[in-house]
Length: 369
Image 1 (cartoon, helix red, strand yellow):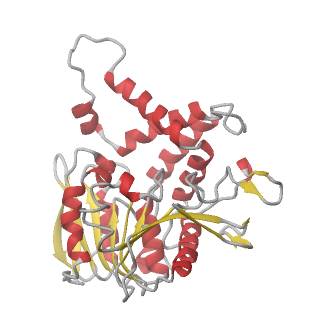
Image 2 (cartoon, one colour):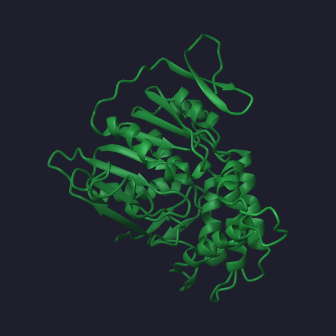
C-alpha cells in the first residue's frame, strides 16, 4: 500500500474543507510505454485498496486482470478507515480525531480525490474502469465528469441515483448505530455493538430470501431456538466490527445516500449521456438492494452500453462472488473486441416469479427504465 499526502485545503461538495488529506492506494503491475494498459478498480462500502484480497477471482496473477499485463490502480475512498483521511484521522486544527465533526463526504468528493491521484500517477487514459455497488457509483460519476478518460467501463449492481429504498436501509443501519450509547466515544470498541447490528441489517439487503433458504436452513425441523440464521447474523456483525470502524461506516453510508449523477447536470439521463466509454452494465437478477431496473436505466441512457443480467443465488453480493461469469463478460473490453449498437434498449418484463429483459430497438415516445 502507498500513500499520497496532499497539502492545503481540500474543498468538499458541501462547502466544508479537509486539510492535508491522505489517499491510500495500491498499484499492481507496470505502466506500458504507451500508457494504455491502466485498469482502475473501485471498491465498495467496506472494501479496501487491495482488490486481489476481496476480488481474488478477477484480480491477480493468472486472473483476468493480471498485473503482468495491466497497470492496476485501486484507491481507498475518502472516509474509509483503510488508510485514507477519515473520521478517526487527526484534525490539524484541533490535534484531535475528527470524530462526529468529520464533514459530509459525497461520491463526487471521492472522485475528486481519485483525480488528484490520477494526476500524481501521470495517467492520461484508463483502458478499463470497473466497480460494483458503491464502486460503480464512483465510476459513473467520474466517467460523466471526464468522458474522454475512460475507454471502457464495467459497472456492476449499481445505480445512477441512490434510491429511497437504499437510503432507508442505510438510515436503519445508522439508527442501530445511534442506539449504541458508546457510538461517539473515543474509547476501545466504541460503537461496536451498534455497528454489528447495522451490519446484520445490511446483510438482509446484500442477500435475499433464496440465499438464506439455501444456506441457513435447519437440518432438523425440531429446533425451537438458536437457529442457524440467528448465529449467521451475529457472526456477520461480529466479523465487521473487528475490521471496520463505526465512524467510517457512518460516513460511507451517508456518502452512498448522496449519490445523484444528475445533480446540477439536468438529471440522471443527461448525465449518463455524457459518458463516451464503451459500457458494460451488469445486474444481478436476485439483487433486492440495487434491482435490475436500475442497471437497465443506466444502460438505456449511456450511448454505447450493453446490459448483462446474472442469475445468482447470492443477491447483491453476487457481484463479488460470481467472478467466473463476470470475467467472461468483461474480457472483450480488455481485448478491444467490443461492438455495441447505440440504438439498443432494454425494457423490463415481469413474470410470475422473476424479472427478465427483452432487448428492443428504441421507439419514438417510448419510455424505458
